[in-house]
Length: 588
Ligand code: PEP
Ligand code: MG
Image (cartoon, rainbow, N blue to C red):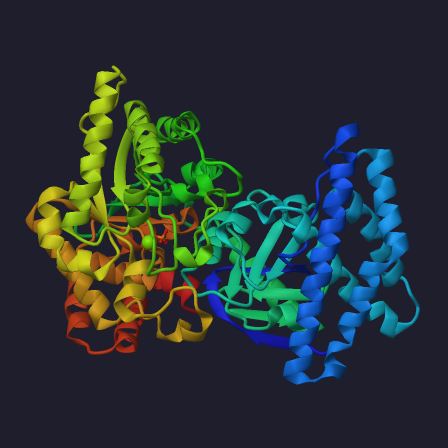
C-alpha cells in the first residue's frame, strides 16, 4: 500500500493521525418500535408495499441503464430483483413482525443485517463484493418504509476516536458529532467557509474539505493523516512521513497554551487602540471552552443549530431557556444572538421544505422569516425574554438593505408590544444590529448606520455574494478571495459609514480569526472581532503586538493594490515583520 497524498482545501488547522471512518450518509440505524397486536397486519402490508415499490424502482432503473448504456450493464439489477423476490427473506421478516411485535422497518433491518453478514463472510471474492449490492437494496427498501427524516446516522453512535471521511457533511451531521470522538474531518466537497469548516473549528479539530474523491480512495480503518493547515490528507503514510507529522503534532501541542498569559489582558494595540475579541457560538456546549479563552462575549450566536437534528420546531420556552442560560453564563459580557439564518447549506428537516427551495440565492434567512412570521416571532419572543438575564444583543442575518431591516423591525416592535401587554419583562434597551454580508447592505451602509445600533460584517457570505463564488464549492475555492479589492472596498465603506454614525463595527466571518486578515481588518478600522474560540488568544496576541498606525498604513496600501493575491502577499510580509511570533506559528 503506497502512500498517497490527496490535496484539498484547508478548512480548520491542526494535524490528526488516525483510523478512517467512512460516513456513508445512506447508512441507517433503525430504532426498535414496538407495535400492538392489531397493527401486525398493517405492518405486514407496509412491508409488502415497500417491496413492491422497490421492485418498481429497480425495474425502472434497469430499463434506464439498459436504454442508455446497454443491457449487459443492467444485468446487475436482475440480482437485486431476485433478492427482493426471495421467499425466505419475506417469510423471515413477516415472522419477526408477528412474533416480536416490531415495526416492519425494524424487523426488515434486523433480518437484513444477517444477510449482509453472510455475504461479507463468503470466501468467493466476486460474491463477497456483491454485499454492497445487497446493502443498496436494504437502503432502498428502508427508504420506502420510513420517512427519511427519521433516519438516524451511525455518527450518533461513535465510540472510538476516528477521522471522519465523508462526501459531504451537513451542519446537522457535524452538530451531532459534538463531544464525540472525532479527531478530524475530511470531505469530498466544500469550501473554506462551509459549515464543516466552521464546526471543525468549534470542535477544535482539523479539517480538509474539497478533496473531490477521498471517499472513493479511502476505506474504513485505513491510516490517514489530516493536515488542516496545508489542506492535505495522506493515505497510508510511510514511516518517515508518520514521524515527521508526529513531531509536528507535538510541536503544535506544545504551543497550544502559548498565549494563555494574555488571557486576562485587554485587546489593545501598542499605541493604545482598544478592541474587543469575542467568540462565535454554534452550540451552548462550547461555552466552557469559550470561557477559558478569555472571550469578551459572544459576537455571533448561530441559532439555526437549535432547529437541526429534530423532527419538530423548537418552542418559545425551549429557546428561552437556552438563550437565557447563555446570557447568564456570559454576563456581564454581551451575547449577540443572530436570528434564524436558514438556507444556503443550512437546512432544517422539521420544516419539510424541499432543499432546492433555499439555495444561497433563494429563500434564505430573513426572506424566510418574513414569510413565516409564526416561526420568527416565536424566536424573537424567546430572545427578548432572555434579554432580561444578561447583555443580549439581537442581530439579523442577510439583511439586503434598509427596507428589509424596517420590515423585520416592525415585527420585532409587534412582539415587544405583545410582551408589554402580557407584562413579560425584557430589556427595553436591547441593541439591534445588522449583519453586513450582502453587497447591497454594504452599499447602503450609510442609511443602515442611521437605524442600526451596530454592524457585524459577515465576510463568509459577503465574499461569495460579491465575487459570485459559492462558498462551499471546492471547484471554485481558489477564486474565493477574501482580499479581493471589491471586498476590501465594501468593508471599508461599511466601516466608514458606521463610524460616521458612531456605531461599532464587528466582523464575525472566518477572516477575523486568521492573523494575516485580522491585521488588515484592524487597519481598516474594525472595532470588534468575533471568531472560533480556538483563535481568540492568537488574535489578541496579534493586536497586542502591533501599532494601530502600522495596521492603518498597511490597509491604506492594500487599498491601492489591484488584485487579491497582491494584497495577501503584502499582508503576509507585514505580519512577518510586525508580529513574527504569530507568523512563525501559522505562516511557516
Ligand atoms: C458570515 O457569512 O460571514 C457569517 C458569519 O455567517 P454564516 O457563516 O453563519 O453564514
Ligand atoms: Mg452569513
